[in-house]
Image (tube, rainbow, N blue to C red; front, side):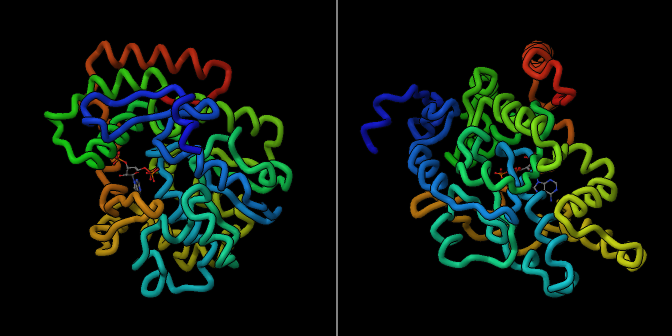
Length: 310
Ligand code: PAP
């Protein structure tokens, strides 16, 4: 497998001092061990009852995992005092197919929830064949870019001064980012959803923020366990929204410390999954020219889809 890297297009962030080299594999960019991880993930035997939470990084994955987990386990745990979300990183409550296939196989959960950042075209064939449900979350491209920039910068331990945003911007616009091009990631899922609309739910990060109730109810319905009127009256929906909110999760001890093991070699500090969660943080980083360039790019890429990423 080592030899494969010589044949793949590659790109190194100049400011990463050689610590962030990306390879293009099956049409998408990622760091070194991803071809192996993808191939392994593709051996997963999906069940029709599986529900897959899919996303490009930095679009709201952690939040979607927490919400889906809380919705599906609401009868099992008292969310105020005993939810695993109070003591476990959402990424360890709902596992990524590409990171933890061995764990998933070893300990099949009675919860049919899995997650992946893999593009649609790289999903295990069994996922497509079994027609399992897919929830896809997406977010304004400019905030994704800023979120992603800080994540990579922190991973390689550089200050803002030592990691020029301009270069991250240029690379992102060329499609070079983890699981990028971002727009192709979205478009693949969107096209698939046009063929099987009943199997897909598209959620937008900003909509979830604007109207959490409506979006979380929609998510629960899609997951097959809608909130009853009694539950709503009893505040179950509201409790789940509060438990999974940025303020609540980011202040939990477990999410402020500890290390997420993406695999045997790479760890990510839990706190890096919780930064600011602000809509429009991009305004602090983008020049007018950058804004114009990325708006034009995304208009072109998304035209005809009805998906708004600006
Ligand atoms: P991942 O793909 O690496 O898991 P993901 O969870 O998709 O990352 O995105 C992280 C973003 O979601 C961060 O955005 P920011 O950099 O703009 O701040 C993070 O702060 C935000 N986030 C994490 N948890 C929540 C939450 N509960 N509610 C809203 N936003 C959240």
